[in-house]
Image (cartoon, rainbow, N blue to C red; front, side, top):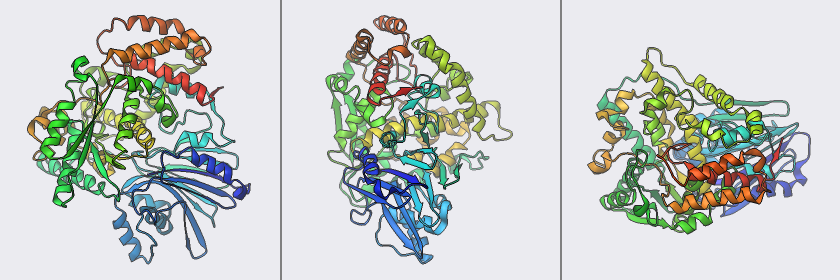
Length: 615
């Protein structure tokens, strides 16, 4: 895993611009703490920060290879899980290799197949390749968008990077945020519309898309998308196929030259990944797998079960670890530490994010990095298999909006009238929702209920999942930890997307098909456990801290946040929070009032530290 950045200009000599491109790369040092490199030619300049996972000596970047008179240079962030399969094909076609790195395999794949090379890849990736002879830049991003990639084009200049901060370090990229950007922050956030970079001049290369930039043209196009097809396998075949795909992808993702571990909450998803990984370690004679869980001091004291969080993770993680025989490491944080780092994730994410969920995950990854460089996580199973409450609740299924954000009217109450008039939040969200629905691939003959579930599945995979992948990528890479997500394997996602809802919920259970596929890998009580989301601390000290800091920002009177919000509405919310009602999150499952205050605190910090220019 790494950080990449680059600058292409078809009308300017960049050989004298090393300082600029290296400054862009320097913003990504956390993504690649092990090595750095830069490369310049007349029209292109690349920077790279490396986290060494495979082939320490042979995978240095930027990497240049020459074939005849053609010269190609790559910067790449990611992992190919079918490296050896592709290498074999390329060897058969006469190519030779100087290393065993996947970077060289990816680059030579482009030499052999051009832009179609991405069709051969199984992995997570974001990369850019400069063809010196054609003076053409090719960029691509993995199918589910696990690895990030942003770009900006102005005139003859094209700038790109793994994170927004890399682009903002370039002198020609402005920090301007317009009405759409504010709507993303206040109406869509902490999610983000695919392709939207929030800053006016920055775009995101969407998941499953490629880009070709030349002097006179910019072409951005999808090379992969979800498709709807009739599911022809019976239940037993489907169970076997799901198990086969999941075992194959977890096993592939265990390949590494550095220590690998897994996240283990004791929930179905992380337990399934850990079980397959532990079995693979045992069969190959490796030492016991290391697993990590997160918890908070006094969690049991403050925890109150509800329909979103039904049980504590700690005892379940211990139960699964003992069953699997892993070396388990519970990581426990105190509330003082969480509060101390309220704003720490902002520097990793470059945008306001998922409040305490970001903070705890960042601290968790920081702790894991002490002993491991690669971790596997259960992210994406709920989107793919239909685990979230909004797949099952009539209120969500009937809602004419994103089902994880049903409280827009309550959210916009805290905005100033001027910002509401400028951003038109209800109209903006409705337009983004309708755009998403228009993308859903229709299956002729499907019942109305199944068609709606297909819509919810598509929305969850393409609009909600990216929020979690952003969170996981930025908070882990901020500590130089690579997190792999087996449930994002495109073969698994493509297959499960077309399993009928009645089969996905086999046995009348949420994610029933996954539970049945994992029989024999996990104890029955673990297989039957109800979903519990990533833990958010119920300690009232968190609400007290975020509420106090939000009110302090109001009282100081100098914050750039103040013209954007209705200050009295925020004070009213603070007053109401002393008598909390039923848990009613404003985003996802666990972002409620305390997180709303935290989000505003981060917006304040973001406006200041990123020198945001509102236009």
